[in-house]
Length: 366
Image 1 (cartoon, rainbow, N blue to C red):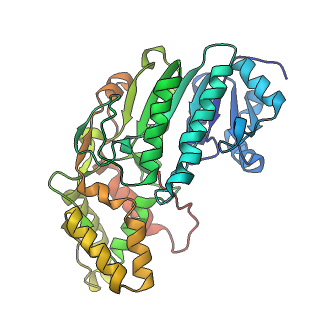
Image 2: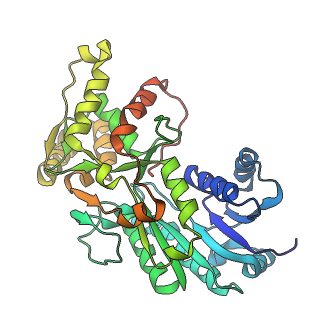
């Protein structure tokens, strides 16, 4: 295979990764890409939807393996041709133990940095992170390199924070793109992949959890795949983004939690059968009160309720840690703000209601 300047994309078999790759290819008809994939068969199914021809070459590897598990000839090819890396691959399951989250998100990023350092030409690394590296911090969260932290709600947040520190310390040419949680494909509300937000909604709709963490000023900052993928494709290879941290978040368009609950319960109440069940809107509680509720469930709850509250414990505490993500850099670079959450929240609810029980979705956090 002849060596041509190319980009390397990780995570291309995931929902966000394949959308980013499609946009990168569409933006430049001469662009060529490598994709690092663990499962070649899964990649081949994705590749058929891209219709990229010979512009994309798959290389088998594993973020968890020494040297990324690359064959020597594949590593040599990448060293000679890669000029840019868009690193999207990650374990996004909020309940993942810290050691496993670090193995993929932190150590895997370190191995990508090692490969980039070996390349024959300078490599631009765009690292896709999460806005929730802010962890338990509250208030306005800037698009900065702050290392101040009050801890994290889950191992995913911590492992991504640690990976960011590696990127800033070791990459010669880098940018960090921090995405908020993705809840639907676009403004039409279609949901291709279920995650923690959808699972929480299902539990509250079923009346299984009567309490939700919340505080004055709490909002839900969520975004669409279309916005995040488009932003990554536009920003990851630009010269004026080097050394920048960018929040791909709703920002000022986040939805206040009280308003979100009003919209959600009003929409569910349109179903007369659901309305007859008389399910009350969950009470908002501070974190100590919610923690007491969790302990009570652990002591006296039945096994199914215990499983539900344990699952929520890796995500919903963020609702009681009110924060607003500054998107000044993102808005200026993209020329527009992210869609406001209220523009797609109800269409997303409608889509979830229309999906028949048991329909196939990948239950992941984003």
